[in-house]
Figure 1 (cartoon, rainbow, N blue to C red):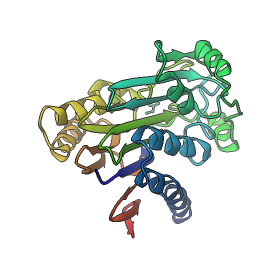
Figure 2: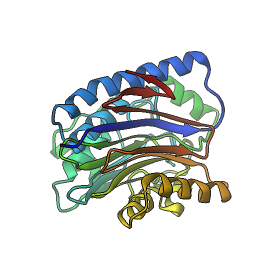
Figure 3: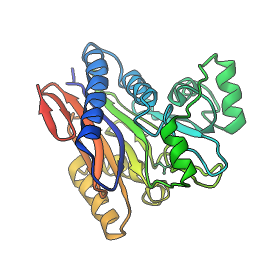
Length: 286
Ligand code: GLY
């Protein structure tokens, strides 16, 4: 039996966190880890743990995914999410879907379908057919950023997990960059932003175009499959990104339960739960 591991992130970016914001994020990440990790330890699959953690992150308006998503330049919120089951090497996702409470739930439902990545109106229609919940993702904070035509460089949530059977999964969800051209496609519903195989699982955050150009999550897991350690592969990718002045980060875990998280940005909001305890924003707790 493998020792389960859960990592989650709430995005990467530049700047510094005020103490108040740091405390709010720490509390949010801790609460989610404490809700999901005991279930993973009790036998929940990595796939269901990632789905649950991602949905909880989507529900928290602190993050740019689900409730709290950023607004595109035409005033609309379009959300994207994906999920990958590393054990079965199966990927599903939704692209630029409007009004859905939890885009990750649509990705979860699409995993068992033949057509596993749906966009726009088709994704919305499928979500209705599946009886998924719809809710307004708009918040005052997002409206305020929109009024200032504020573009962010990042914003995503994600989760990766190793379960007791040794299976891996990854989930990623985003509201996009903010004030981008309508219908821009981010990295999050692609294998660059979210990938898992039998060897590793990774979820990326940061500038979507650069994450795609470095094929971050898929490259990392493929390097591990080819024999590199997770930390060698992760360090290599981050060094390449730094050389190119690319701005992104990622969380990852391998089939041995080793974890690796890193970023070229100033901040990566992330936390982990392992048999040794919980850690959030660099602070360790038992
Ligand atoms: N990584 C999220 C985005 O670029 O939209």
